[in-house]
Image (cartoon, rainbow, N blue to C red):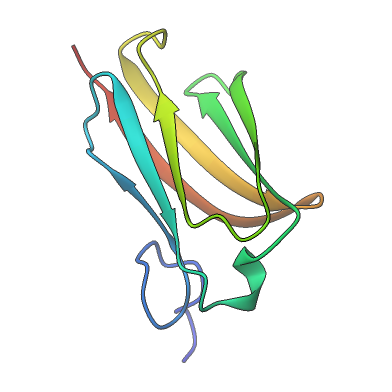
Length: 98
């Protein structure tokens, strides 16, 4: 189907989910491993709304769930980008609120 790839929802087309959103102290990131894009060579990079990288996490091969501590983040909007090698695979926005 046209337009379905990377539409933001995990499911039959693959995907990355982030919850809770808005977040307080931590976020959970879940990858759909049924999609071949999500099995190895993955890095999760989190940027603030100004495009500044605030955290980079190398994801162990085959790991489906990641817990990210966001306590040190200022309240605001962030973008989590999942990269395989140097290519963007998925991106999600999330909010840190106190």
